[in-house]
Every structure is written in C-alpha cells, then in structure tokens.
Amino acid sequence: MAEEERKYAVPPAFRLPELRGLRVRAATPRTLTATYYDTGDLRLARSGASLRYRSGDLEPWTVKLPTATTGVREEISLLGPADAPPEDLVWLVASLSRGAPLAPVATLRSVRRAHEVRDGNRVLAEIDDDTVSVLDGRRVARRFREIEVERRDGSRRALDRIEDDLVAAGARTGAFVPKLHRALGDLGPPDLVPPGDVGPHPTAADVVALSVRGAVDRFLRNDPLVRLKQPLDDGDTPVHRMRVACRRLRSDLRTFRRLLDADWGRDLRAELKWFADVLGHARDAEVLRARLHATARADPLADLAVADPGGIAALDAALRDREERALAGVDAAMRAQRYLALVERLTVATGQLPLRELAEDPAEAVLPRLARRPWRDLAAAAPMLRATAPDVFWHEVRILAKKARYAFEAVSPGVPGAGRAAKKIKKVQALLGEHQDAAVAESTWLELSGPAPVTAGRLAERERAAVRGIRAAYPQTWADCGSARLTDWLR
Image 1 (cartoon, rainbow, N blue to C red):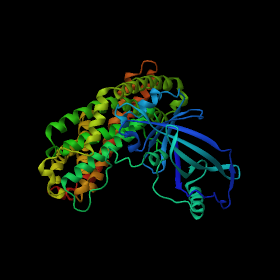
Image 2 (image 1 turned 135 degrees about the vertical axis):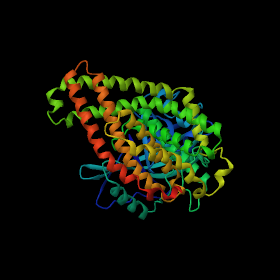
Image 3 (image 1 turned 180 degrees about the horizontal axis):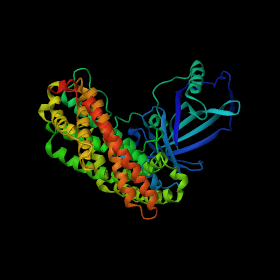
Image 4 (image 1 turned 90 degrees about the vertical axis):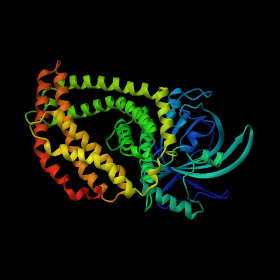
C-alpha cells in the first residue's frame, strides 16, 4: 500500500492552527514505541527504507520502501512476535540488505496527537503531531517534535492548502526526512549511486555511468514489487519492468564493451542473462494471459467470451498454472545466493566501474562508432523482409531492431541526433514485437487446444490475421525509419 505524507519541523511552542474551510477532529493521544532493524552499516536507512516493530499496532511489523516520488513510500505490515522480524519482511528488503544480518539500531518513543481533517463526511488527511524521544536503553538521548500530514481521501491540492496554513503558523518545510534518519543523524550516502545527469560536455565515461546507474536503479526499484507480486497503477507489471532493466543493461554493456574491462563486462552480462531468462518465463505467461482475453474480445465473428466461456476459462487456467510455476521460479531465484551476489555487483557498479582509458575521451568522439554495427546489421536485414517470410525471420529482425534502438538510446545522452533516431527504430521494434506476440500466441493456442479445440482454432486464426495485417503495415514503418538523414551522426 502506498503511503503519501509530508513532514514539517516545528518549535516546541507550536500550536496547530485552524484550517480554512475544513474541520479538524482530534483523537486521544497515543504513545508509540518503535524499534528499527537494519544492517550494521545502515543499508536500509541509507537507501530510504525501514523495517520496524511498533507496539500497539494491529500489525506491528512494517517495512517502508522508497518510491520515485518524494514523500510517497510503499508500506507493508505483518503480524509477528516482537523478538525477530518476520521472514517475509526480511526477504522483502533483501536487495537492500544484500543478505547482511538485521539487528535493532534505534528505538523511538512518540507521543502522537492525531487529528482528522474533514470536508463534510470525507477524511482528506490525518495530521499527526509527534513528540519523539530517541531512547538509549531507558535514557532519553534527545527529543524532537514534528508534524506529519498523511493523505487520505483528499487530493494533493488539499495537502497544499493544509501546508499553507501550517507554514503560516510557524511550521517549516524542507527535505523529506523520516524520523529514523533524524534519530540516527548523518547516515552517509546510499550504496546505490543515483543516475544524475551527464552535464553539457560529457565524456564517454559519463555516459556509461549514467546508463549503468539508470538501469540498476530501475532493476532494484522493482525488486520488492516483484517479490510482492504487486501490479502497477499504469497497467504494467514489475516483472516486465525488471526484465526490461536486465535486458537493457546487458545491451548497454555490449554497446560499451570497448570502454569496460572485458572480463568484468562478460561475467556481469552472463549473470544478467541468467536472471532475465528466469523473469522471461513469467513475463511470457503474463503476455499470453492478457492476449488471450484481448484476442477473444477482438474476434469479428462472435464474442468468444460469451459464446464459449468454458473454452476461454480452460485456456486461461492452463496459462495461469504456467504463470504460477514461472513466478515460483522467480521466487526461488531471488532467494538464491547467486541473486544476492548479482545485486551486490550491480550496487557496486553504480559507484565504481572498471573503465578503460578510452572512456575518458569526449562522448561525441567515441560513442558514435559504438552504435554503428547494430545499425548496419538492422539496415541490411530490415529491407529484405517479405510478407511470405517465415515467422522466425521476422523475429530475427525484431531482435536486430531492439539492439539498434538500445544502442542508440545508450549513446544518446552524449551524441545529438541519436535519441531522435532511436524513437523511429522504436516504432519498428514495437510493430515487430506485436508480430512476435501474435505468432507465439497462435502456436500457444494450438498447443493448448486439447480441452477447447474449436475455441483455440478460432483464436489461432485471429492471431494469423493479426500477423498478416502487421506484415502489410511494415514496409511503410521501415521506410519512415530508414532515412539516411536520421543516422548522419554515425559518420
């Protein structure tokens, strides 16, 4: 569950003001005692995450995970005895702890005065006025006070209104700092170096570092969501995003291989391929299940979901079983020491890359030549595709399009013109990806036709019709991409 909140520092004499046009209802004050667990070097805290036991809560164990949005964190709570964190939560933060043991690092006792902010019957937000004591055994090491506003049914505009009134009364805005961070003091930088930017005159090394940091950030940000099997708000899945991050980083390491230590790059690409293949089985099942229902709805002759709901249900059950087995494989892989070793290598890579001397040269002087071969391979094969070619040939050109697009995107932060060309290639790749999905789905429906042969046959016919439509659209899509002007920068 996503938790969105804002925090404000306030002086000891601060009084909660009246809020314009809103009613505030105070609850009985509560005393909350929270014990936080972390590694010896505070890997969770330095990453923006936390694992705590808070007495008095219905589900006392809670993990909070950072998201890409400041002030928004994923919150997962479980039951469990007070003496040790639940194994499921320890596993959930494994990519941050990287397998290091967890132990208590801080105990905070807060006197909380909660206030519901209402607009009619709606609770827009909760304002928590917390006086926090940092405990050292039984001794209070220090105290601080903060105001926390947590969004409920209100909009962000409502939070802005509340903030205006709090600031007018003396509350201070600033960086979002969790209580634990205030208690622990200076944590030092996180192990995972964020992507940042390359500046106006980047070297090749700057572009390589940006690429690696961005891909690792996307990979690890989706790690807990894959473990939770949690869908995303935009309809995508964390399995898909994590797999794309894997494959993208593998591709970028191949593009930049002349700039990196050869053994290091080869070994890391092999480990990324291992895990991308594990994710691939689950992703393939996801795609097929979604396509099953989309293809059924798109049947021009009959509504298969109504005409033969049993057939659709039988096919979906077979795919669901395949997906569950694939996700079990993902779970097993993520619990393995091999996966933790991969996470460790990726984390270290964001701060320390084994670069060759050539990487210190200006990006525009070095990077275009690294993208030439993927483009030449695509430009040689793409015009040769014919409507009568076997599916496998279309799939091979799709792979070449993906390699060229990824190479162009990888060098684009340091090479003007590469990003525009990549967008054109992306359209070709997307069309060929749809071709591959339809071709794979066709063979899958026939493979699973046993319990529903008529339904499977009709679905397969519809997929082949989609293949024919894509092949008819392909020549113009490639013509839009194949302009020599798009790749002048390669010369």
